[in-house]
Structure formats: C-alpha cells, structure tokens
Length: 240
Image (cartoon, rainbow, N blue to C red):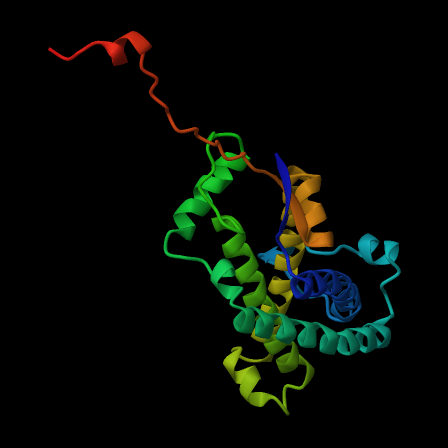
C-alpha cells in the first residue's frame, strides 16, 4: 500500500532552491574577479604543467576585462548568500532539524558502507532516518564551507577593516587560496549531488519540490481470535 509522507519542510526547500541560483551567480562572477589575477597553477622548476583555467576558457565565456562587473555582482549576491545561510542555520537550530543533519559517531563508518552500496559492491545499505550517513556528512560540510566562504570573502574584500578575519585566515593570500579551494569544493559537491539525485529517482526529487514523498507501507495483519469448537458427542459423553 502506497502512502504520502511529509519529508522536507517549506523552510528547507526554500533555502535549498534559493541557494542554488545565488551560488551559481557567485561562482560565475567570481571567475571575473579571478581572471584579473589568475595565478594558481602547478608549476615546477619554472615550467607550468597545469593551469586551472586556460586562456581559451576565458575567451569562450567572455570573461576577460569584466573585473568591475564581476565585483559588482559578487558583492551584491554575497549578502543574499549570507542571509540565506543564516536563516537556514537558525531554522535547523530552532526546529531541531539539526538532530537529523549533524553526523553521529557511527556516521563516518556507515558513510563508507553507503558508498559501497551506491557502487553496487554491497547489497544492503545501512539503516537511515531522514538522511543517510553520507548525506549527514556532506550537508554538514557544505554548511561549514559556506561559513568559511563568508569569512574568507570578507577577509579578501576588506582586509584592512576586517584585519582580524584576515589574520585568522592566515593572511590575505592564504585567505584567497582557501576561498578559491572552497569554490572548487562547491563545484565538486554539485556534480556529486546531481548524480545522487539521478540515482535516487523521481520520488526523492519530487520530495524536495513538494515536501512529500510516496512510500510503500505494509498493511497491518488482523489476527482473528481462535475459537475452539467441540464435537456434540464429546460434550454428551460422561467423564470416567
């Protein structure tokens, strides 16, 4: 028997879908800023083996010479990104959703079993509630990454006014490295997230849109009381 079960709240779905276009714009505008000082590469003995973004990539997306535009978009949507994150964290704390989100002691061990199950190496998946162990770790990590992006972003944006944040981040240049690494982490998370959504199927995706999912529920078996019926001859026969 199929029943409809509530899974995701409106606040969770709002933060999820709002954050996606905001983060996309942040990464897109961040590329404009990064092009102005594209210094990260793998260089050994004066020879550059790998550059993160070659010239043809910038030319293809029309990124060159758009530094001012990139900064305007980036610093505008930074506030939407921050406010959306603050709202989501407060909601999880007040509603108690953090209990379903924060990893437990056994989560790291079970996350490895979840990966083996997704790779079809292990038949049975570990038991889970709203989120499995791998999701707990990933979703908590993305919140920590968001906080790190805000801190390092402010350290880069106003290194004099927020000198204490710049000092905590290890200086301006190291803060920029962390900020760049976190951006790569978002892209990696996004790719894995999309693959997992496809593997999970339409029912899981629908729950993030509507808040409800369809689950199979076994009907309860009604047991009838046992009535003992005696033969009439047995009732009439005298006891010895």
